[in-house]
Length: 90
Image (tube, rainbow, N blue to C red; front, side, top):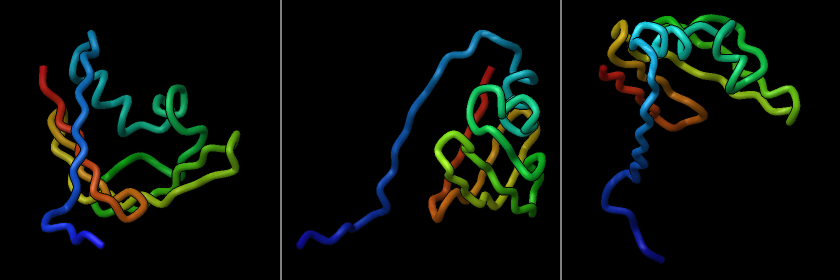
């Protein structure tokens, strides 16, 4: 059996033709995010908080620990045991 010598990393990029402030807000505000990702959230992403995201159509949910938020620049969360980081650039 092979042993990993480093943590696996996946990287993806997406071009969104909207002002960075709108895109950032869409990720932290569940009123907006629930229109394109999950169906329900227990709250807005804020540093130090734990929120629950629900995908009601699949009967699935996940707890999300918000580690760091740099307004209009970066969101760092723990999502189901994995570290997820979004970096926003104009």
